[in-house]
Length: 516
Image 1: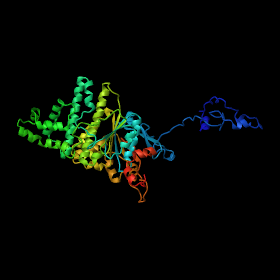
Image 2: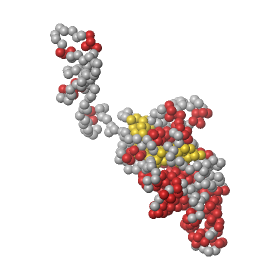
Image 3: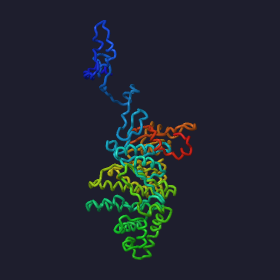
Image 4: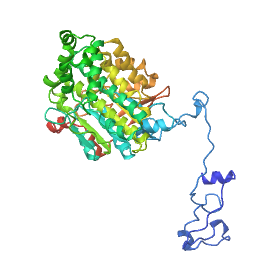
C-alpha cells in the first residue's frame, strides 16, 4: 500500500531516525560487486521505510479514495461491499452478524446523537433467548457512564445479584418485608420547601394528581372494573382534605376519612343525608378495604419503609415475594413501584431545575410488562401516563415482554390499542427469537424486510431434538429504529457476566448438567 501511494505522489518524506538506531544507506546505493555489511543486514529501516520501491514498512497509510453506489450499480464488485456502519454511541452489546463490527446501544446516547427522537426502548422475544441478558448488559454499561438504573419491579428476581454487585440499593417488598405507601409523595414532597410559591403550587398539583391516579388504578385492579365518576370526585376530595392534615397520608387514612363523612365529602357526593352518603361510598370503601384487610394486607397499608435512594448507582425493587400471592397483588405492586420510581425521578428533576441538585439521567427497566397491564381495564392508561414524558426528565424506559399476544389479551380494545402504542412510540425496538405468527403482528407496527423476517424466525426454535445443544436464538437480536434497516447483533457474555445475568440459576442448581 505504501509503494502504491508513493507512485501516486502521496508519499511523505521519512521521519528522523530514532535515537541510538543505526540507519545505513538503502541497498540500491551500493556499488556493483560491493557486499552489504553484516550490520546493514540486521539494521531496521527508518520509520517510513527506505526511499525506494519495496523499501520497508509504512507507519502511516493514506486513506484510499472511497466510492459509493447502490447494489444494482456496483453489483459486480460483490463481495467487496460493506454496510453503512453500526452505531458507536453507547454500550457495546455485541458484533454485527454480517459485517463483524462492534454494535453499541444506549437509548439516551442515541437520542443525544440524533439517531432517535425519544429514549423509549421495547424488547420483544420468546422466553430464554436472552432478553434479560441484553437488559443486564445495558445496565452495566450505562451505570458505568453515570446513568442511574431503576429496576421498577423485579418479579423473579433477575436483577438483585447484579444490582448488589454494582453497589446499588435493594428494596424487598412483601408481607413482613418493605412496604410501599401508594400515597407517599416521596422526594416530591421534600422539595416543596425550597421552591418559589408558583413552582411549589404547580408541584403540589402534580403530587395530588399522582396520588389520585394511583389510588384509582389500585381500586380498578382489586374490583376488576373502572371507578365511577362520583367515586373519583369523592376520592379526590378525600385526598385534598388529608393533604391539609397529614404530610404523607396512607390508605387507612383515606378509609378513615371516608367513614367519617365530613361536610366536604358529603358535598362532593351531592347529598346531605348520611344514609345516602354511605350508600354512595359503600363500594369505594369496600375496594379500599381490600388493600388493607384482604389478600393485599401488609404491603400497601402503611408508610413507605425504605425510600428509594437516587444517589445509589442503581436500585432494584424486588417484588418476587409478592408474586407468589397471585397476579392481583403482583400487578398492584408493579403499579405502586412504577409510580414511586417515576415520582422520585420527577423530584430529582425538580431539584435540578432550581439548582438544588445535580442533573442526572436514568434508565427505568419495566420487565414482565404484560403482568401489570392485564390486571384490570384502564391500567394501560396509567402506565402510559407515567412514561409519556420521560424525554423531558432525562429518563430512558426499557419495556420487556414475551409477545404482542400478551398485549392483545387485554380486556378492552382501547387498552389493546394503547398497549400497542408502547411499541409504536418506542424509538428503538429490539426483536429476539420470534415465530412467524408473532412476526406477523410485529410487521403491523415495525416494518421488516424479507431477510430480517427470515433471520428472526430462524432464531425461534432449534432444528433438532439433540439434547445439550445451544438455542439458535440465544443472544441474537435485531435492532430496529424508525424506517432504517435492522441491525442483527450477536452478544457474547464474559465469564463474570454469565454468573450475574443468568436467569436460569435455579434450574441449573437443580440440574447442574444443563448447558447454556
